[in-house]
Image (cartoon, rainbow, N blue to C red; front, side, top):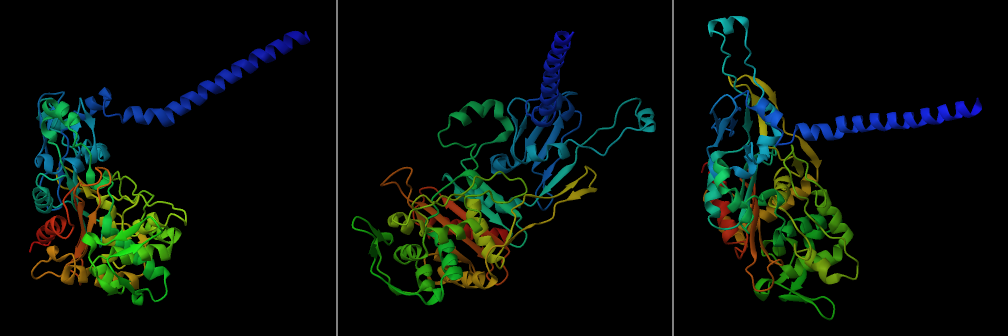
Length: 475
């Protein structure tokens, strides 16, 4: 009898384990796997549901349509991108064969949700035919004119331009080149994927580059917030500084700048000064300042996918690398969006606003469904430090390396960068950088420009920034 009971208990225990396993798997599938299957861009059931409603329109901030949809038959519709390759990295694409990306993916549910319902009366009046159902529209922060200007000015260069409103974090423009036309992926998909220049890569958010001298902005902030009397710290710049027995840090083209304080060194972009400054600060202090700006972390956004920028952890004896990190070289890597956020924070008195792309969702008949309000990521640096940096950045454009960003009638502040292209090796032209904001007294736009292998930052990138700022401010 006891043996029988023991056997029953063993069998029941086995069944209990199996039951628990089954419930656990079902829970896991429902909670973890299920949503990813439902939201998969290739889920046929979702596409059937998606095509029941004519997909809503995505607009720029002025109400200009960036997308259009037309029904082909009861099961399919055609999505048109009015700007073609100009907006492709932001808007993404929606395609039954190639999936769904960008804002199309993030706001997919909104774009295929409609407020148009069939009533019994409407069905009778329309002889049993349903009303034409149109999805909600999405109004973005983008400005079509600024976006097109940035796209055109980059020309055939690889690179990116990011323009933010420093007061709100609104993305006014975000351009990456080379780009691709999302209007006919069937014909171009193979060529796009074989292209070694990687046109599908959004260089504005996922391109990581040595920021070069634009990073001196972060180094200067670190000194101002961690070193007593940092503004009056002077050195004699002889064009190079010896760091250890085997390494010397040089200014661009070996330029000798003489006696410099922080303001002068920033204006004329002294590598000697900022390399020495990085050594005096130490890796930990400079790294902590960089991480305040979300280096080594994900920049807080409204869902824009951003590759984390990188600032290294270095040993105290790695003096050459520490000095290089202070001028945005060594293994420092930053995205254009990252550097736009740095300058935007300075322009906004030290408060970082989260970059965002959408302001509202509206019905096809213009009724407001929801709004997306600007959000702060916090006071990153003191307002006093921000004021000092604003003044220094203005001097760069007025009297220093950034004169190429000058705009008649608008006071522009900025910083140039000429970054060694370590990936392509010695002898390849450096990347051209510019970061800045305008107008100086009441910043409305903050910008970051990179032109891959574009040479000096004070030329290619600064010139592009000047014209993009003019367009954004309509001057």
